[in-house]
Amino acid sequence: MSAPSKMAFLKIAVMGAGLIGRRHIESVLAEPRASLSAVIDPSSAARDFAKSKEAPWFATLAEATAAQRLDGVIVATPNQLHVAHALEAIAAGIPVLVEKPIADNGDAAAALVSAGANAGIPILIGHHRRHNPMIREAKRVLESGRLGKILTVQATFWVAKPDGYFDVDWRRQEGAGPIFVNLIHDVDLFRFFFGEVEAVHAMESNSVRRHPVEDTAVVLLRFKSGVLATLNASDAAPSPWSWEMTSGENPAFPQRDQFCYQIGGTAGSLAIPELTFWTNISKPDWLQPLVKEDVPFTPGDPLTIQFQHFCDVIRREAEPLVSGKEGLAALRIIEAIKASARSGKTIHLDKTQARRGH
Image 1 (cartoon, rainbow, N blue to C red):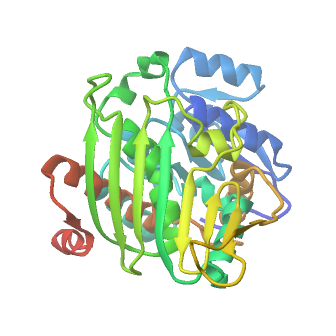
Image 2: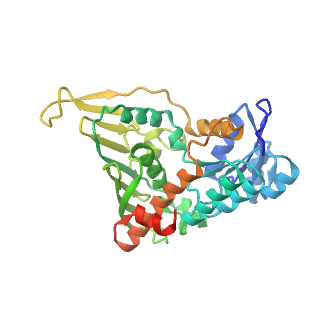
Image 3: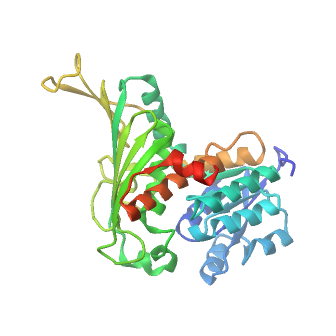
C-alpha cells in the first residue's frame, strides 16, 4: 500500500466507541490533516454517538471499506478483540493503531506482529504515555546522569473503580483487571526508562469483588540494568496516588498535586509526574538538607501527540514510536506477572521467551 499524498486528508476509522474510543475520536476531529471517516461499532449507542459527531457509522470494518477508502484504523475495542480487528485492518492494507494491550495473550500478539511485518503494514501500539512531553523530559533527566546510578523505582496505582465500571462484561473476565488494563502502561514506561526486564515476582488478590480478575496486585521487577522496581496496584482503594489522578492527562479525573512514580539513584531522586528532582546540597548524606528542583517542560495532550505521530506513520514519514514488537514485549512481562501470581514463583523472562521461541 502506497503512502497517501501529503496534501490529502487522511481518512481515519475508529473501531470501538467506548471510553477510550471516544477520546481517540476527539483527537481525530481536532487534527487538521485527518477526517473522521468512520465510527465502527455495532452498538446503537455508537451509532447515536457517530451521528452526534456527524460521522459515518458502520457495524463492521468490512462495511466501512466497502463504502470508501481508509488510510488508517484505530482499534479501541475490548482487549480480547484487538488482534482480530487489527488483523482485519492489515488484511485490507490499512495502517493500524491498536490500543494497549496489543492482545490478551502473547502468542496472538506475536502472530499480529508477524502479519504486519509480512504485509509491510505499520502497527502503532497505544501506549500513549510515551508521547507525553513530561515523560520525554523525564527520560532526558534519567539519561543525563543527574540521578547517578539508578537503583530503584516505585509505582503506585490505587483507585476506586465504581460498580458501574464492571457492568461491561469483558472487564470482569480474563484479559482484563488492573494488571492487564492499567499496569501495562507502567511496565511499558519502565522498559522505556530502564531497559529490559530480567525477572518478575508477583502476588494478586480478588478479595473485594471476587471477579475472575484481580482487584489488587503487588509486583517486583528486576531489570537487566540492575534496577529493582515495585508496582503496587488496586482498583478498589480510593487515593490520590495514580497516574490518572496526578498526570492531568484525562480531564474526566480530578487532578491531585501528588506523584505516582519515585525513581531513586545514587545522586538523587525524581518524582513523576510532578517532575521534581531531589538531591543533597553537596554530596549524598541522609543527615544533610535536601534541595528540591522543579524540572520544567511544556505540557501537551499525549493522545493528540500520539495521533499526530500516527498520521506521520501512515504517510511513511516516521517509524512507530511504540511498535508492535514493543507492545509484545510489554505484554510478555504482563503474562510473566500473571504466571508468577498463579504459581508463587519468580519468572525469568529470558527463559520463558526462549521456550516460546521469541
